[in-house]
Image (tube, rainbow, N blue to C red; front, side, top):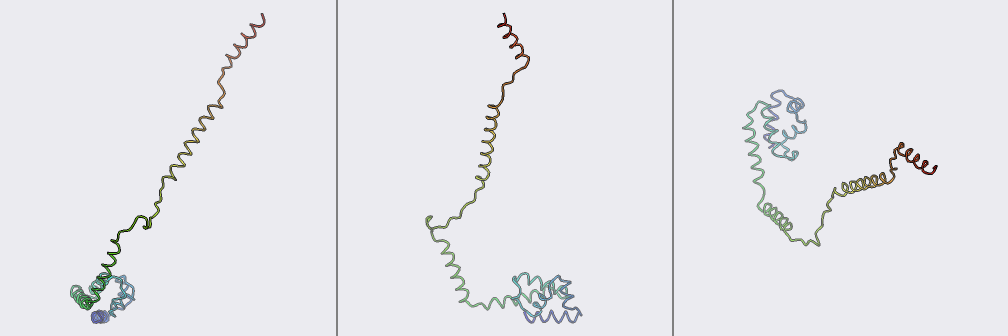
Amino acid sequence: MKELGEYLKHTRISNGVSMEEAAEDLELSTSQLENIESGNVRAFKDVYSLKQYVRQYAKYLGLDPEKVVDEFNGFLFEHTSKISLDDIKAAQKKLEAKEKEEKKIKSPYTMEHKKKFSVWPFVLIPLVILFLFVIIYLIVSTINKAPVVDTELVSEVRKEYVDEFTY
């Protein structure tokens, strides 16, 4: 990757483009371009995004982006093919152990249960209280209602009552 980075740097300098100008045009930080030019692959979290940055940078410099990406892919192949077989087996054993641990049968008495949060009590209790208040209000309002008495009828009844006792 160092050779590819040096080639990109040499092309940028020969085109008369400054690091800051290239970073601004590509919407990358200068540190990202410096890492690409120095071949520092570990500065990037994702190799695929680095590949896109290299493609974009090559196109910006007027190079054939496919040839540059092929060179980058060659570096990746060479780098990943240097992983030892023992490292691969160790990683596979770790993965198998983790899967085996997940497959173990767990007793319902020893398992940790997550408490479920239910919204229903918070909805149901206020509704029941509201319903009770409405019922109590209706009962109290019907009990406290005075009977409707027509004043004309009262006066007629009093006249008859008074007339009966005056004879």
